[in-house]
Amino acid sequence: MNFTILTITIITIIGAVLRIIGIDKDGGLWNDEYVSWYIASIPFGKGILKAIFSQCHMPFYYFYLKIFNTISSNDTFLRFTSVLPGVASIPVMYMVGKEKTKLTGYMCALFTALSSLLIYYSQEVRFYSILFLFSALSLYFTFRTIKKPRKRNLIGLIISNFLILITHTIGFVYVFFDLMFISYRLRRLYKKFIINTWIITGILFFTVLPLTLKILFFTNSMSQWWNNLNIYRIVQVFCDYFTPIISNVSVIENINGISLNAVFLIVPSLIAIIVISAGIIDKHNRYNNQIILVAISVFVIALFASLLGKLSLNAKYIIEIYPILIFVFCETVDSYNKAWFKGFVFTLFFVFQLGYIISPAYASFLPREEGNKYVADLLKNANLKKGDFIVLTYYPQSRFTKYIDFSNYNITEIDKARFIYYYEPLLSAEKALKDGKTAYRATFLNSLTPVSEFTGSKLINKLNKDVYYNVKPEQKVAFIFLDSVSFLDEYMFQSVVINPQNYKRAPLPYLIFSNMRNEIIKTLPVNARNMRYETKGAWTIVSFQH
Image (cartoon, rainbow, N blue to C red; front, side, top):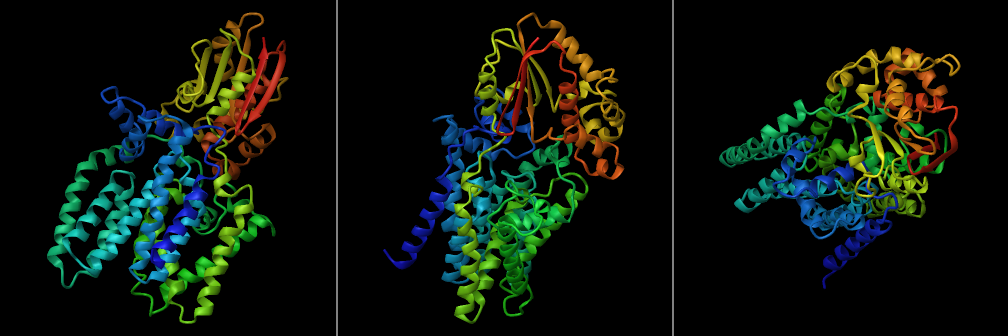
């Protein structure tokens, strides 16, 4: 075995180990993962296409997952469907870097193996891990096509880009700028080759265009309302790409003063910013690093979409540019003339990546706090009996049936698709997402009334009708709350609602479900007995006998 094969094998094994450690998550699948599994579990001819087309993502991943789901629906086994492309990405990124030098290839492979962001999504039943693999292949064939515009390289480029198109709704943005870059580099000698590339890619894109347009313009989602775009959101994307601390652990706006998290965020980020900036500015490296223009262009489009409220700016949503950033960083480090300085920068950067492995908040060990299995555990611990009442907030019962059978209980769902029926005024789902903050302001202000003066609301009136008036003696009522979207207690909620600036910044779902929780808690029946609170992960149950 030669040195190159041995080195890449060792790096790949390290990356595989980091992706397997802690893969058995206690909480089971969280909502997005659960949706992936649920759609993949639908038999052909039983509505799987309709289910796919109802989502805001392209279909490839659901069919990919379905292959594995026919073998086993075990949560840990399903997570391995993301480990596989995550591990495969490591040698592919070596090939990307090797287009410059072998050393750049080694660094690209090691960066990919140790990336906390990639490790995290290699343990999640979502498409981000395989999308990174397709993006790395696209980058490899982009370099190969520019270097040698041959048929086999063109085929590899078209296939990898088409896989991006059928995996990610906004993947066409990356593919467009990638082809623009190739066209620019080959513009003088290979005009016919460029035209053929655009024609073939265009034909393939038109096969998925109807679905892309349907998702972009006719699918409503609350996801874009979670984060208001600000400078912290922009910096957070960069931190997620280059530091061992991803936003699932600590968001940058929560970093105050000098702490372990602050050091592990700031130092690698500064190194990456300086190195990449040097690679772009340095006239000797500028030609090799022109590919960064593709990443910048995609980022600008994502930024613009975020400003329009169509996208939440997040590293995973533009993961197509990540292989480019890795390559530019590693290629620039490799281009330093002095070996000692090259080794120092490289070592310092990766010491921080490796150093965080001992932290319980390292990507491999991160639980899925919103795991739906926690809800099943909470309901089991509540010792509910046949005929008892369960009120589910934020998610409907279909999100938990993998872990619990609801057929013995009376279920009321006040989920993110039905909350509109519990608020005044009654709006359509589309109208609520667009104008809810204005329309529901009076409802929110009314909920601030002290409990001694509170005269109720549409929410409480419907709960009385649907639940409390139907409960028989000795029966139990259990409310399920998702803490991560209903965390504003009455005091915090008031400070947001009465302050115009705070109210404008607050995402609508937080207001809706925090208000819902506060109203329910403060109007619990006075004759409630055996009151029980329990929390698991990001879930809380409040149960009592009526």
